[in-house]
Each structure stands twice: as structure tokens, then as C-alpha cells.
Amino acid sequence: MYQKKIPVRTECGLHLFKELLSGKWKLMLIYYISEGIIRPGALQKKIGADRRVMTKQLDELVQDGFITKCSYETKIPKVEYQLTALGNSLLPLIMSLEIWGENNRAVLEAALSKKL
Image (cartoon, rainbow, N blue to C red):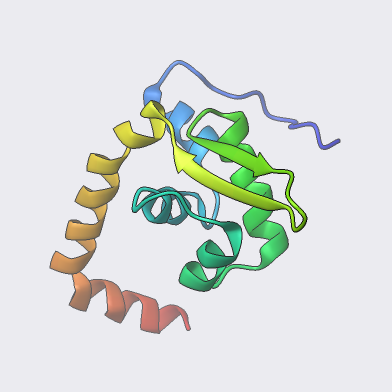
């Protein structure tokens, strides 16, 4: 398994946030799971992520306590995800980021177009 060469800094909440929630899809996954109990296929359709990457990030969110995973042993196995109290506590922050993005859409789109 991969071992980080640089130790994790925990003296600041921002470092903790970065360590646990950095990942291309993690905030989007939390946002869409907040809409209600959801299955992986529906999440993949909403965000357009690669299934392997999305599953890895979902597993990390479960391990870190932001979401729960409920598996059903039926004829066709079924998995559902929902937010924990910790995950729900992130929603105001995520909604603030969404509002900020909308309020600065023109500037952000111009910056993004320079990168593409």
C-alpha cells in the first residue's frame, strides 16, 4: 500500500479538511448523496466519474465517517449510500461554495478557458 513520504499535518483544521476531503469527486458525492439515499449507478450518472475512481472515493468517505454504505444481499446485490451527521455538517460549506461559484461564474469560466 502507498505510504506518504511527507507526514500529515494536523495542527490546522484546513490541513485536516484537505487530507480527508481532497479528491476530484468527494464534495460532489457528498452533495448528491445529501439529496437522499442513492445507489452508485445513479451517482455515476450525475457526476460522470469513472466508476473505479468514484468507488474508491466513496470507500474513503465511508472509512472517514462522512457517509454510510448499506449493502443488501439480494439476488442482485444492491448498495446504497447516505450521509452521516458528519457529512450533513458539511452541507452549509458545500452550499456556500456553490453560491460563490455562481456569483463568480464569468471570472471562473474565463480562468478555466485559459487552462483548456
